[in-house]
Length: 490
Ligand SMILES: Cc1ncc(COP(=O)(O)O)c(C=O)c1O
Image (cartoon, rainbow, N blue to C red; front, side, top):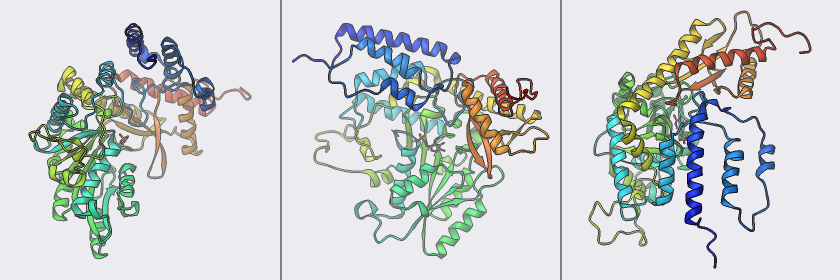
């Protein structure tokens, strides 16, 4: 039988070289690209939908489709003015890392399955602990992203407060309660729902003027739950909220968690790697007391998706939650270190070699360059805030804590609906494709929201963004580029 699945040696070289050429060109021209393609779902489907192919396609033709259709009709998250959501920028080095990981096809379940990749993961996790100031003997592993890291941490928290839950379920346990600020990420409530804690048992705690968890309110919530006979189980500190970048006070929360015997989980999916930046170091006082931490190398460590990370201060707490022995996985005749298995610390068995890109980028760039990139991202966000505060047509809606900036267009004398106007501005901005921010609601108001999380972004990009927004606002108001009303019917 002919092997139609493997490329020939010559095809591998030709296709691989052409793909690398394309990659180099992609990164060279990234800045000039439209960020969001001007297209529709139907238009894309028309190009790619077809009946299940019964016979194959020539490899070169596939590369053509990859470039001319799939790449062209994607949003370019690595663009220096892609400020929407918490985008992951990626880099050529880590794209090459992905190719290497897929070629090697290591399945990083355990040392036996992947000896060197397992050791690379240990090294990369140790580096992350060092960046964070987290205890050396903590356990940790890479997962698909922040949501799964939060899920794994909450699972460990649940075992801590409901011993035996893994074996027998929640029957016989009193109601567990989880506390997170109202600015916490939805993955916390989602995890609580999936873990049988119940989304209704996630108590959203009011925030202060800087959108940080209100400690007095937290205390009241816990007292109320104790009186009701519930079991306060876990407090989640948000270390960089997705809405505004707010950073909950870790040291105070660590003391609080200790007094109430709560599991302290830190959701640092967005802000965790701000620990690299000297100007943000003070936020991380107390992190060593956290029982678990979620981080996303695919956010502020500039890696491509998908790479999240969860750390547990007490390795045994993770083992009690995830540890599993099956006859078909039991290591035989191995010393302790070689018997090591990641499945004892997280929900997955088969795992991609995610650690490779973490290791590659830290080793290539060095921590100093990464710290400078994070610091510079924060400086860009502050620069944007300064420009907004100095303007007469925009206003900030939240202070900049890390690299997220929330603001809106609010020209003097405008008496119409500002929420509706800003929604129209966002649509206009996306339509133009030159800069990209996303949206949120803050204290009931529609906010434009940007996040600088890209080593390619420079101050000039912040100036361009503001100008693009101004032009979008004028279009939304049906004014010309100079801000003058357009003639009727134009
Ligand atoms: C604070 C926070 N937690 C969790 C997440 C979820 O991370 P992921 O998208 O990697 O699942 C995000 C995503 O933006 C986040 O900002």
